[in-house]
Length: 217
Image (cartoon, rainbow, N blue to C red):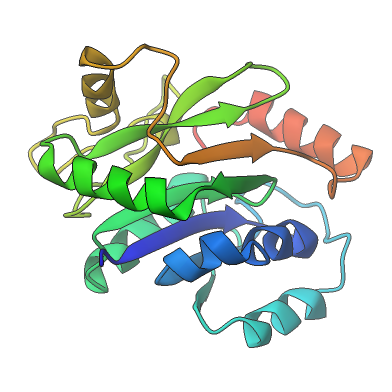
């Protein structure tokens, strides 16, 4: 069986995390959840939830690898789960945010991993149900070796690109999937739902302001 990791970059969202982890079909397939916790650099807003809630979650689930990274840039936090996945010998890594959750058919998804393992591409699309983009597949399933990293950019959103040691862009390899699949399809057996149920209106507004103002995050 493949070693499947999940990388989650988050801050102050204990109930979103618990929703992901409480999905037993998904949890049982995953070897390690890499929780990269921390407010981004250039933000000053304080947590809206008791930090003890995250501590309680860490103790409740055995498959968590928890890292505190407060006041780091987004790419630094995201690069941490690539580093850990490489260090721990993961075969695949799914990237999630804490305001998302997974629907999964375990048997079909296991077949998907077998198919992806035989292909050359290192990035694969997972279909996402998002209120702003209907049924859009996103690059969320990645294959080892995890020696690629996000790089700082002054002109584009830095975490939107991912480069291997030779400078090749990894995310673009997702499009190989569409050579023999329709463009709006994702890999079989899994889907991401985007849902801000556990975010207050105040936090959503602060997030939007930060994303609009800090392009080099």
